[in-house]
Length: 107
Image (cartoon, one colour):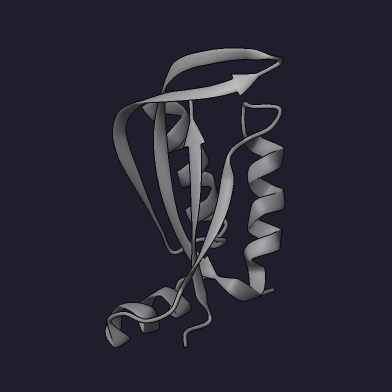
């Protein structure tokens, strides 16, 4: 079992995704951010069914600082209630996971 996780985050567009991801990588809170293409999201908000275009980001980090990363995302995210979901990494390439650990700051 590894000590790493992926945070799944959605934002309104690619420009927002790049800004948020760049901040997190520069602050060494995440080692890597993968930004998807545009997708359509359907959800309920204030009793209404909404449909919007969004972009997903997959952020790789250490489970030791995941809560700190989540808090930082909430500070800089444009939504009042952003989608932030943590998926634990239970295995993978040893070399990749080593690189991941070397590229996040745990304090």
